[in-house]
Image (cartoon, rainbow, N blue to C red; front, side, top):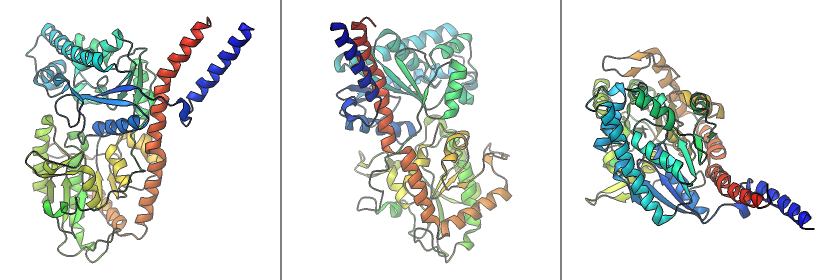
Length: 498
């Protein structure tokens, strides 16, 4: 009889285990866990920060407690580790001595190794001290195991994975081998470090890629089998609209109501290809006469005094200051109107320390007539899916992941093609005039077509189905179940000698 009961118990356990894999079965949703989310920064307008905020909200909605851990350049972290910031002077020194691209050699190989270990020790000690207080059940780590920008952080959390039993879900948005600046290590020490820790194979780590190209390359480079999960957005939220808070935005930045508002919502970094947006706006300006007297898809009437304005709300990374200066030169050369408004835009609405109104990134989408997304490289494409949600026409350069994973989903876009035709004397990429001329013509047709709103609704439907909040909710439940339910049932089965 005891054997029979044991067999029935085992059968029931396996049945429950299978049910636990069903993300719609609320009985087996993991709840009441304390979860840490770790990144260099949180609460900003970069893609990773935005993805972290989505995960935090969903995990909390599932009944878990979430703590955000980051470096000091953040907004909303529950715990700050100063040494996690990748622009920390000593971290920058490590990075620039580790890769030939930066042409820096003020540390010997031995000194570099010691520096990596010293900074890593501080990060590890601070995190574990906080963990002793909070008792985390799970850590979600973003990009720390995949980029070459902060080797001490990779070592710190690698040792935490190796020396503790805390389960980790490591999401890799970008990889060092995808970036030219991290392509060539300065020594065998760094090469071997990257081979082992970036990213680290460990039984306590579930690896997540955000695109299929990265999944293939991670398996080829490291033998690591990863789950693919792309960027998502909450399509169930209220649509962004003009309201009492944001109604003064366009006047505040000097834009007229009948101007054509072209939004470049990304950060200011070189891989975003913002020069192509400048080139596109210049050509659109040349063809403006064909817009005069016409009404756009959103009801805006274009007149002779309408300007075409490129608006850039994204912040500039410190390492991209030279790129920012190059963009300003390109803007001046092109003779277009462009406005940088990062001083009044952040991830969320708030009031600054000087009592100035700060708008959210979403407020800028409300007033945009057209979104430019000319990135040369993206891990997936946060601003793309935001534009889909905002129901705005999108001008997109077909970067590799777009071609591999996004294009096939069937969105209606204005394509810049998938190849640049060269670089000018400032080092900026460009598209041949005859191509950009036709692209601008297509954009004008898209802006003024009576069918445009239907196409944008189709985009919204596709995005909501394939990249909505429910998709992320299901994914997070599945990942939590992989850890917590697997361990629970393994323990029970061991009691039966299995």
